[in-house]
Length: 333
Ligand code: URA
View 1 (tube, rainbow, N blue to C red):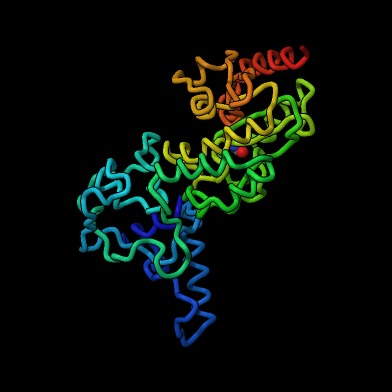
View 2 (cartoon, helix red, strand yellow; view 1 turned 90 degrees about the vertical axis):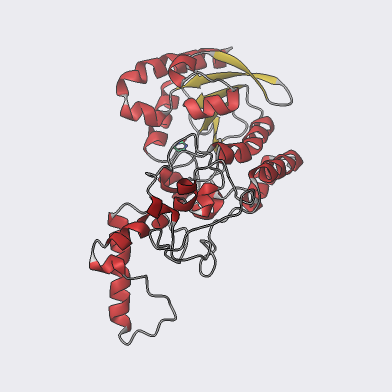
C-alpha cells in the first residue's frame, strides 16, 4: 500500500495522530522533541495501516471540495474512469488502463474531489510523475535497449532510463542475478519487497524455493541467469500495469538476446504471456515447449508455475517438478 492511498483515511479521522499533516523540516514547532514524537507516531500509524512506500510529501485530501478538471484529450490514460484517475496517484496512473484491476475504487462522487490542486510531487520529494506518454516511453525504451551492446551497457541504460514511473517508487533497479553465461535463463514478473531492498531478483521466499527447485535438477545461480520482465518493484507489490510492462519489454527482450541462453524458462503466467505471447493461463501453458525468437536466433522456451504460486498452492509442486525434470532432460542434450 502507498502513502497517498492512506491520506484519504486520515480525513475520515482515525487516530488523532493521523489527522495532522506530517510536520515539515522547516516548521517552527516550539518543542522539537514533541514534533519528532508526533512524526514517529504518524509514521507508525502509516506502517500499521500497511503503507510501505512513500510516493509524495504533500498529503492529498481526496474528499474535499475542489473538483479535478483535466481538459479532455490532455489527460494521460483518458481511457480510465474519472474516479480512478482522481484516486490513483499520477505515478501509478502512468501505465494504468489497468486490466490488472489492482487500482480500483468504488465510484463515489467525493472521490472526484481534492483540496490540494497541486499535482502530486510538486514541492517536496520528487514524485514519480510520468515523464512522457506511454507510447513515447515505449519508443524510448526500444531505442535505448537496441543501443546496448552488452549486458553492462543495458544495466547502465536502465539505471538512467526515466520512462517508467516505477523507478521512482522502487528502491533500486533489480537487473539480474546468476551467471549470464549459463545455458538457462529464468524470467519472473517483477521484484518484490526483498528484491527491491537487496537489488537482486528472487532473493525472498519465492527465490529460496526457486533455488531449491534448481538444486533438485543440479542447477544453481553459478550456472543459471535470472531476471524479471519488469526490473523495478511496483509499489505494494501490485501487478505491473500493461503499459509498465510494455515499457519494460524491450529491455528484457534485449537482456535475453544479449545473455543468449539455450533455454528460457518463464516463471508464472505474466512472464509467459508477455514473453511467449500466450493467451492461455499458466495452468494450460505450463510444461509446453515453445520457440522463442531472441532477435538473433530461435531458442527453446518453457513455461512453469511461479514459485510464489507454489508457496501458496503446494499441491501444484508436482507439476512444477515435471517441468523441471523436462528442463533437466533438455539441458542434458
Ligand atoms: N517474484 C518475481 O516475479 N520476481 C522476483 O524477483 C521475486 C518475486
